[in-house]
Image (cartoon, rainbow, N blue to C red; front, side, top):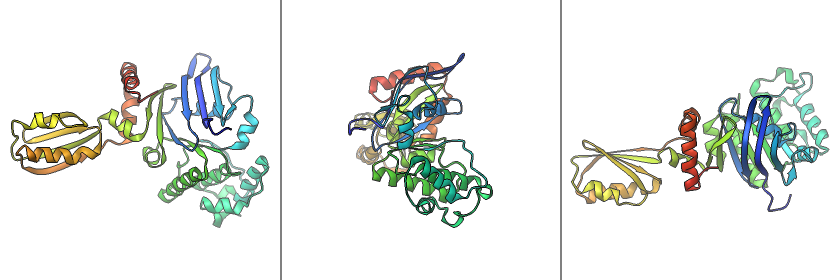
Length: 323
């Protein structure tokens, strides 16, 4: 992989199974050193996309390159360079945690200390316990340790925090940041909005096999309506609506009695709204702020009907926000 190659490049990927279109003309780029969050409801096509990335599924049409190599032609070398944590996996019940990691190391022909990897994921105390006695969360930690084998250039993580308690999820987030600092790229598929918001540089939302939204978290929040500031005043001066409407980064102002609500495209302009309100002669008696979450955006773009989705994509294309 050269320094200019994306970690992942997907162009026009389509995957059909008889009459079912699992992925439909998907374009996707993950840059080197980036943490990319891949979201979508069940059946959206996330797992199919991951299967094509690691070369286990041949696409009906389109191209997929991983770390600068064609995912089909170089599938073996790609699997050597990629750390995969699948959404569903099975453990060898009679093998210990240490033996699982040693097996992964043997497959990648690397020599590392299994104990170091098990310690990173919080399994040092159960390294010699058979996997049959592992809980769901312990099993996912073990699978993550196996994915980390060989210092992979790209981590493909499918629901890495599923079944983990808050401490386990915190450990995963910390490991992701450490891997990026080391120089790895991360493709993070998840249903957990909280986890994606906390670690991802960009987010793509898949629906019915198509990418219906893409951007950083702040950009997606802006599409949902951005930040809102509600001010309660003793009375509303006649000049206040025009004064607020003339401020930068304010997309809308609504007045209901003595409460005015301003929609902002950036949180940094909240103070300017308060200053302008008071400069107009209004006395502010209460302040409430609202910032939409990524979860709200996800619900919006995955619940809307197809016509609304197409309209949203067209609007995003005009602003350069979405794929």
